[in-house]
Amino acid sequence: MPNITFILPDGKEQGCTARDGLSLMEVALQNAVPGIIAECNGSAACATCHIVVDDALAPMLDPISEHESDMLDFTAAPRAPGSRLSCQIKVDGRVDGATIRIPAEV
Amino acid sequence: MIKKIVIVGAGQAGLAAAAKLRQEGFQGSVTMLGDENAMPYQRPPLSKAYLLGKIEAERLSFRNNDFFHQQNIGISQNESALEIDRAAKDVVTAHGRHGYDQLILATGAGAIKLPASMAGGIGNIFYLRNKADADRLRPILREGARLLVVGGGYIGLEVAAAARQAGAEVTLVEMAPRILNRVAAEPTASYFRRLHSSQGVDIREGIGLAGLKPDGAAIMATLADGSKLTIDAVVVGIGVRPNAAIAEAAGLATDGGIVVDEFGRTSDASIWAAGDCASFSYQGERTRIESVPHAIDQAEHVARNILGAELPYRPRPWFWSDQYSIKLQIAGFNRGYDRATVSQGAAEGSMTVSYFQEERLIAVDCLNDARSFMLAKRQLGL
Ligand SMILES: Cc1cc2nc3c(=O)[nH]c(=O)nc-3n(C[C@H](O)[C@H](O)[C@H](O)COP(=O)(O)OP(=O)(O)OC[C@H]3O[C@@H](n4cnc5c(N)ncnc54)[C@H](O)[C@@H]3O)c2cc1C
Ligand code: FES
Figure 1 (cartoon, rainbow over the protein chains, first blue to last red):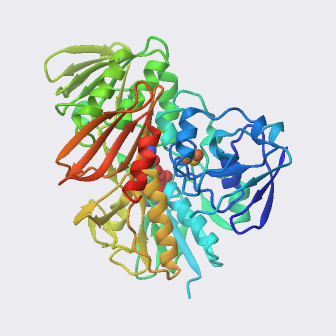
Figure 2 (cartoon, rainbow over the protein chains, first blue to last red):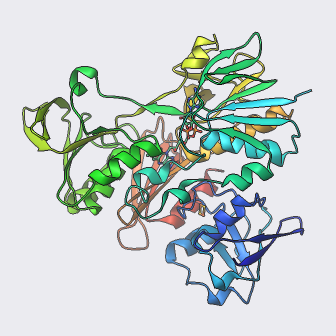
Figure 3 (cartoon, helix red, strand yellow):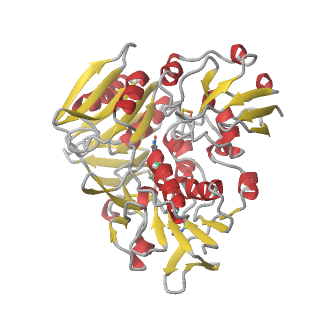
């Protein structure tokens, strides 16, 4: 099972093992990672599952859809180069060893 | 000191309250009583991806057993709260009594049923509130099955969409003059009418269901205009009623829903309510909101207020619906609008309906128009 490290809004790190096939949002909720609310349960409708993936992972992931991109333009914390909706990213080998930042809300 | 918190109802609001209590550092016992044969799960996919078989049952659950274990949250299934003994501060179930210092009612709502005079003796009538309902309905939605959907609200429309995608023949009847009559303006209704018609759903508005009769293995439905349809199954989506019976029997103030103040407290200072079952004052009117974001938000407020935060709950209403490849996102609450305007979005087929009250924007329906939705959300301060 892939290992992931979440960097929390307060700078602390939280390591998790993630089961293949879940979304990163589900992994975060399952592990009570603070800052991921996921009000729409993964429908890409709320943007309360905003994460910032590291530079190594970003280009390996499936491309951002136009809808996801429009949502990311208006997230509570400003969009960063690695910004994604965590509900849209499936866990597989690509995310193993990744660090994923939970942006602080501003 | 608060040692024991009991939560009745292990749904969206119940889970949000339990998780928030722990996140806020509450160390006492947290016990969730759920009457379903399932761990807490999401309802929205029941009329969308789950009904279409696109996600498995396991993915419906919010959290697995490890979460409840790690967070030390007690959870029971198949255990219905039968009575609240306010004097003893006990919740009574068939298995015994659960003492509480503070009690949260998160009982949700139940589907309104067809009258017995109409439904009596007819099999294959479906409602869609629980996973069990969806599991019964799923095998019915197959190629060539003839389905009647009663009710043109969001749930009825979503079921119609899923059924068409599964290859069923679908007729949808709405008694009101048009679909989405209570919840959206005409342009939004027209958009969905066109969408469903183009997908082959036979939508009949201003026509109620008059009667059902067995017809061999099938059902003969008679509509209010006298027309008859032979169908294999009926799905009824005509609204919900809050589950307030145990609160009412315990003498708590109810008005259909369980009456709470701005902090989420009922008329008993040690009992709180949140989610679909709770009725609160909003914009000067008693209001219930049936949506996931509201259930989470109000429940989290209740959790924090039990621990002393004194945080008034101000709804930040928004909602979504998925039908075919169309995503509807609603921001705000359109109650009392006096004008609705339409604008086309940047992408083809995208559209936004804006609701105004005395020239002030109060809500938007955004159809495949995420950008307008997010902008409006910001503008509305949600
Ligand atoms: C098919 C469907 C599709 C939906 N789609 C959307 C959507 O797209 N977007 C959106 O925002 N919202 C949607 N909703 C609404 C949303 O699911 C609800 O608003 C939300 O679940 C409310 O949460 P709740 O905790 O108040 O109630 P629920 O989630 O219904 O949970 C209440 C729980 O309490 C249990 N219970 C009741 N009485 C007792 C008792 N006496 N003892 C023990 N347990 C009890 C119930 O069985 C239930 O498990 C949908 C709902 C349905 C049914
Ligand atoms: S959970 Fe709502 S957008 Fe990801």
